[in-house]
Structure formats: C-alpha cells, structure tokens
Amino acid sequence: MGLVELKQRIEDKQARIAVIGLGYVGLPVAACFAQAGFDVMGVDIAKERVKRINAGESPIEGIEPGLQDLLSQVIGNGRLQATIDYTNLKDREVILIDVETPVDKNHQPRYEALRACLNSLGQVLDDGALVIVESTISPGTMKQVVQPLLEKSSGKKLGSGFYLGNCPERVMPGKLLQNLRSLSRVVGGMTPETADCMVSLYRHIVEADLDPTDCITAELVKTVENAYRDVQIAFANEVALISEAVGGDVWKVRELVNKSPGRNMLLPGAGVGGHCIPKDPWLLASAVDGKELRLRLIPAARAVNDGMPHHMVELLKKGLAVAGKELKGARILVMGYAYLENSDDTRNSPSAILVEELERAGAQTVIHDPYVEQYKGDLLEMAKDCDAAVVMVKHEEYLVSDLDEFAPKLNFRVLIDGRGLYAHRSKNDPMVYHGIGIGNAG
Image (cartoon, rainbow, N blue to C red; front, top):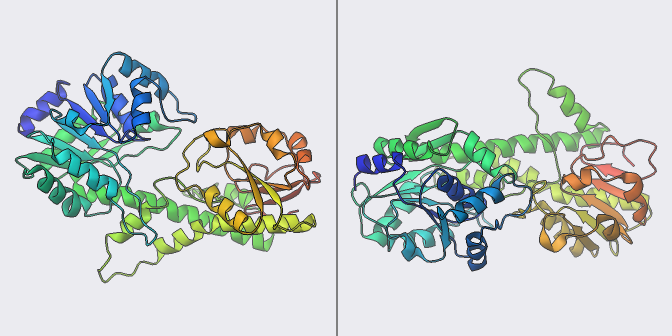
C-alpha cells in the first residue's frame, strides 16, 4: 500500500491501528483513537495489565480525569482490544510505539524495550505499514537505530516496504487526556509525504497545531523542551538554596520576580522525578557523544536537581538537632512517594532517593502516599510514634491536612517541607519547621 492510499484510509477511519506499550502514554492514545472511530489493537508485555484493560479497568491509579470512563466505553463497544501477542498485529496499517526509553547510570540511552519491540514488530509487519515512534528518543535514533533494525527484522525497505515517522508524546500524569487533545504536536516524517500522512492521522484526536517536519527536528524538539524545563527548575532550586543561606524566602521572591513582565521562575522543590525530565536532557546530550562539543549547562542542571533529595536530608538533620534528636535511630514519616502530586507514578521518584539515604544513615522510614497502593493508609495513624515528617509530594490530601491535628502526632513536632505546602504557616506555631528556600527557619 502506498502513502496516498493509506492517507485516504486514515481520513475515512478505515485504517487499522496498533499501539505498542499501554502505559501512561500508549493507553490514552489507544483509547482516543478508538473513540475517534478506529479499530485499535493495543500490545503490552504485562499480562495483568492487558487483562485489566480488556475488562475495561484502567491500570493507571491517581486522579486521571475521564480516562476510566473512556476506557470503559471503547472496550465496551469493541473498538479497543489489548493483547500480549504480536501476531495480532499482522494486518495493522498504522503502528504507534510507546515504550520506555530510559538512560543507564552513565547517562547513555537504554533502548532494550524499543529494540525488542522493533524485532517483534518486524516479524509481522504488513506491507506498506506506517510505523510511528512516540517515545522520546535521542536525536538521530530514528535514522541510526529504528530504521536499520526494522529493515533487518522485517526484511523490508523503508519507503517501499514500510514508512517511518517520529511524533513525540507531550503528556503528563494527571492530565493525560487533556494534554493529548489540547497540546500541539511536532510531526516528524522520514519524508515530507510521510509527515503529511501522519498529520491526517493525528488530526482525528489532536485539537491543537500539528507541525509537519523531519525526524531529526522532532527528536530535537522533544528532548530540548524537557532539557529547557530541567534547566529552569535547577535555577529555581539554586535560588532556593541561596535564599536559605542568606535568610530569605524563595516563595515570596518567586512571587515578586514573576510580577515583572516576561519572567516565569518555576517552583523549587525536593527533587525532579518522572520518566521524562530526569533522562531527556541526557538523551539530548548523548546525541553529541564523540563530537568535539563540551556540554556545561545541561550536566550542571542535572546535578542541581539530583542533589535536592540529599538537601532534604540535611534539612532534616538540622530540624532534628533543634529538637535534640539525631538522625540515626530516628523514625521518619515520608509524605509522598510518587514523583508528581495526585498521581501513582513512582518512576525516578525523589522520595526513593531520600528513603535510601535515610535508611543508610540508620533512620527508620514510614512511607505514606494516598495514590501508591503499597503506601496507602491513614496519615494521622502513620504519624504516631514518628519523630519527624518530610513532605516530598504536594498531594491534595496534604494540602488540606490540618497542622494543628497532624503536628501533635509527631514525637518532636519536626516538619521538613520540600514543596512549600506550609511555607506561610503561622509563625507562632511551635513546630520545628525547615522548608526548601526558607532561611532562618525553626
């Protein structure tokens, strides 16, 4: 099948779609295309996840507006099915790839999931199929990794046996459907004709701009935008550290800075987590490995943000010292384990780093998170017999918590605030309080 015919089938909603990887990106993408009227087959390696999806049950916890209802609808009407078997993709004309693309301890891309997916897909790839990588990848990956691997595994040639494009996702937990529908997309094709065909596809589910371009530009845009955000967060975190050191209040400073036109200082915090921001800057940087280009800003920003959970430990030591207590042997309540408020997503959680360091220092940790299954529980009950509490995530449950009720449960009324939840509490409160970006506290 040629692109002209495929584009017409897409516009008529006759093209059969597959989505590989049914996580935070792939599941809502598959559901949206099914809602638009397409026949969609989803593939995932997790049997239990596939079972839950086929039962019309979303495996994504946390507050995710509209997703459960949409999934129930498209499973119920038969527009979406899930499977673990790639042979079910042999007649699919459009295949979207949404698998994880992490980096290793040396900040190099790890494409195990992507390579495995391409190897399996190649065995069943239909003639003339359009394959679109939505996963975030290092600039140059489409040309250097995806194309040759798919050609080898399928025995087909790009441009005749199949077509290839890159349309990076732009979603975040808590706003999956909203982001998917309302945020613009960069649509990168290996040829302009491929990009044009992809625009026809995404127009069925995206209400915002769809900008056709080449693959290298699409790869750059996605990694650059997350590296940009990482650098901006690092600036906010460094200002917070400066504010602490000189006796200032970063929250007030930020408020007043942002009153100046064109300024948008981001929020400081206890660390940067999630699947994207901690690794996408390294994906961008890895593209120039072996070239005569020394990067300074991106590695520096990563170092600042990676250091924030460790700074939380130092604030905790100071707070406990005021109460006459050492960290070793202390019982610490960690409030929040997901990386993002009102989400169950624990990928690259700053809390995991905090807990590891606390336990290495001889402290005992009690973890609470209203959205992560193994850490759910009654916050006030879990606070009993704890010496101090550390706020790591700005969950709604913590926003409405009453300090007058919560604080007395702690043995030493020590609160370390990594998200500014209680930055403007009453100064008459007897609690020992140390917060990110607040100097002369306690």
